[in-house]
Image 1 (cartoon, one colour):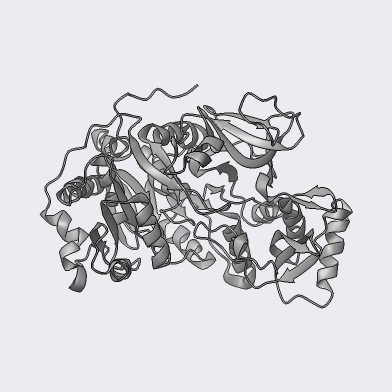
Image 2: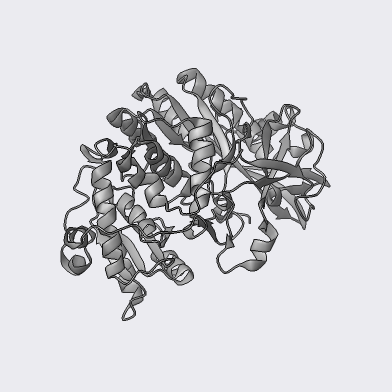
Length: 527
């Protein structure tokens, strides 16, 4: 059953100001190094941010582009924008200047909130034409003061100074279907697109997934591998803990295995938002003799990319911390199929979250009314739920192919078993036809990952004499011995149908990744 949400709904109230009304203002909301901010302090800064944004000409439904690392000002920029009735868009501060500028041209924000170093890059690129108003925060490390005054070139645009001068603003009354946040797709099948979401979408998923399925609690302390600009982490490490009065631990530095282990220990985190790659890196670091302390964790999440069963088994042997692996998308905001407390089926992505409906349809289905494939057969996942986006900004053709009223065609291949558990089979557009047979790169990647000397693998299609062939890029635990490529090919031949073995094996030190942490197959050489 879908939760009942009021006609008048603003996410700033739902996630933040309602905690003040509940008497939770004194609880710690954000931890950053050795500093802490309570809900009352975050609320005050967010109200002042509303005024500062309005002073810079921001009107309801206009966009604000937040390009910040995981620092506390991200929170008041986020809630201040929503409270002002405007639309949040988010970007990675490590992205190249040209790409950030492309997004600015695409979303046309009224205000950009970013660090001094990113502001300098953008201002240099803009020249004499300022494309948006700026609010600037310092380039602060985790143990620095993120609210220090910005000096020099952007002193007049200092976010902290603007907040100090501003009077606390009032929340703009918005309808539940007013625009709230645009989430960017990962760009796995082309240039990232902005999926346009309303206030209702985020409250709905929070109720049915975060509260109803995973069970976030007031005493949770959350830490995340993915960065806050990514909708996966915006949910799990800001919105979801704030919805129940819990706490999130932030840090700026690159989320290496060592840094994640430090954050878990330093903040005594109970919940970790993880991805398979970092699970593997944590195991490697631990095996190298670092003896990582993750004892405070009660549970972890995994999403963003497929979790190989062999990796999950290794994780559970070392740290008996449940992993709730699931799948979501920018088009639906967050996770809609997942494993959950007391119901984990290794290798699967679990069952549909209550409140959503899922169908596995033939790849050529033109609408959600097509007859589903039989249990155990592969098809494309279609999902229905109240968090579905309105469409893609400035791309109606793609919107028509993806959104069908209440339904979203995910483009992900799945099979569902007789018990209702969903098994990810890869992207429909990733399938390769080799020797007249369809091959799933994901299936080969998981098979390779089961070898004890393989860390991770990525498989792509390459053209050879006009025919499709397969090439596997493989990370190994040590230098690959002579003949190891043939060993891995034989490994796949004995575990899968023989035609599925990778025709070429290339050993790499590290697989390339995009800013979401996923393997970036577009950067793997095909010639």
